[in-house]
Image 1 (cartoon, one colour):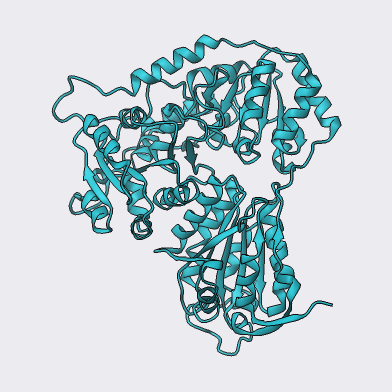
Image 2 (cartoon, rainbow, N blue to C red; image 1 turned 90 degrees about the vertical axis):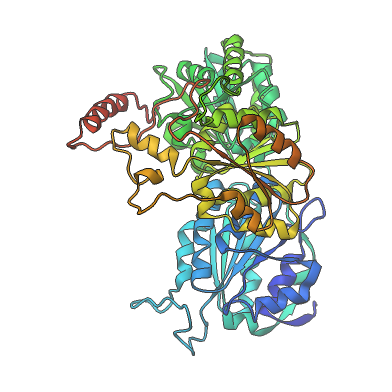
Length: 614
């Protein structure tokens, strides 16, 4: 019979986390990001200090961005490892709700441990307590329920005996993977309990590879054999399954071109002959051409987000069929798809075996080469420009591309650059990290730090607009303190340029997006280089594209983050080199503006192309 050990609930949680291992012999939870307050400093703070390097603790600047760092780490680790994040009760906890939603949408593991109110209720209401007038069991942490894959409130020390194994099951389950929230009552953290010693024995968590049903495999193989113009849509599930090589082999053997989503980009290198680039609203001309003509669309590890599908107007071929290979049955059965619920790598291998030597080969390889040539031309630096010329985002991408190597990873999250990078960045395999499931402004700086921590041998280049930088930049100071080097390319277009263009594209007046169209007493003159330098980064402003290239090269050997600011044109998007596609953004039915009424008519015409179900 096992013995017991008397620990506080907080000490027990920390000891358990430190003993949960990967198949590679590493801790699954690499460490804990913490900002302490009265909801976690006395209990969990004492336990973490006592643990030392057995479960390291790192201090961040903001609860949301600490969690963004943890999420980026898990994404870069292909969901094989994760981090924990703890906050006090109240605003510290609710600051993390946005990050929880981000992890939920992207199916990424993170362990969130917000402090909670007193389980005893004796001192109620405590500082920062949110009281529900009709429900005494509710606290601010109930905000996490809809954005957590697993939620639990630890109000007794022995709750950990069931809650913690459940939490790890979710974080390591490829189908259920996502954020876990353990709302930890602050008095419970400090209470002691006699825990079974075997509860703390090291445990290895394996990432399962669920095999698809053989009947589903046969159904998909039959569809592929009869298809004349099939296409593969590569999603993030290919990367999390570590099926990159398998996808490339499948596409080559069976003659089916691959088009990419934001999450699936760089599963295949852009140089791979079967990679036709990204699809949809911000898709390449050649990718959208094969998508429009496809009579069979085969999604692999994708959620079929509206940007990928052109709001379900991209796949135009009459009678086209849809297949969805996904570890999560919810995603496998979307939009009337023939679903294959299973691991992407295993499913592709089994479907390939069922197909034998069959190959479609109904695509034009030259269209891909023509598109890449256009991208090169569009991303080159303009010459003979006027003195007041502002570079395009494409030129900025071209500058980074020319200084890149096989080790470079381009990363971003929101604004203009995600669409531009998806379209124009020619990634090596693994050379792309984009948070576009939630498209969360403010992810960039924190995400770059998490990415670099996960992949220290990679050259991380973070693209961020001035709008996103203003929303969340404080983890730059953390990266300086921890000596986590990466390069930030900050494109300053004086506002929210991407949404300003969307506003105008739907017939609206420029309003409240660019600073010049805002209700302000004076136009801001923000010195972003001085701001970043004040946090300890090496920060400079590039005067033009040539200068940007030189400064990127100079940043490669620094031990701290480098921030390079460059002014850009707010009025132009990705431009040439792409195909682009309609996106369903509802236009007002009634307006006094002729521009809106014209946009409405165009919108109604475009709606006719939507093909929502098979």
